[in-house]
Image 1: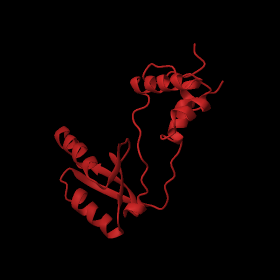
Image 2: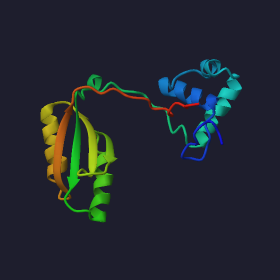
Image 3: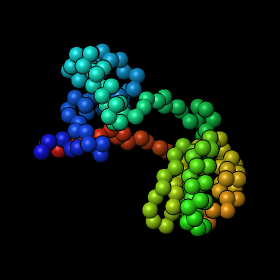
Image 4: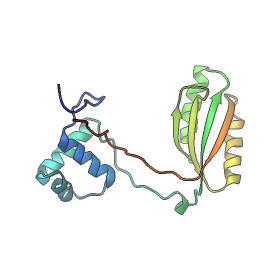
Length: 165
């Protein structure tokens, strides 16, 4: 049995993989030379190991983090959505339409009394009200919504869980 937990992809992550992932999560723009130095491996090995993580589906992309207030999206909200009926066609339409809207940051399908949680960012509380009215209250598949304003948002650990030896 490996001392490292197996990923859901059936790929064991060793210590070097974990270092590479942690460094890339911390700074996706890190140079390969610096990544190699921090992982105590050769730059060619760092490049091969990073490519392997991508090919294995463990690293799924690199992105720029945008300051939402800096681009005019100063109001964030979490909106719980309960669907009126669980008709597959309406669910599929909802699942395709909502995340494609430019205001939606994330959509989660959840258990419990709520069917979906939406994380959106808009320019004002008036824009938030209008967005809910235009996109949810008028949707025939939506039975109930509840909006919660986000005062602050802190990202947590986006990499693998620590290994307990």
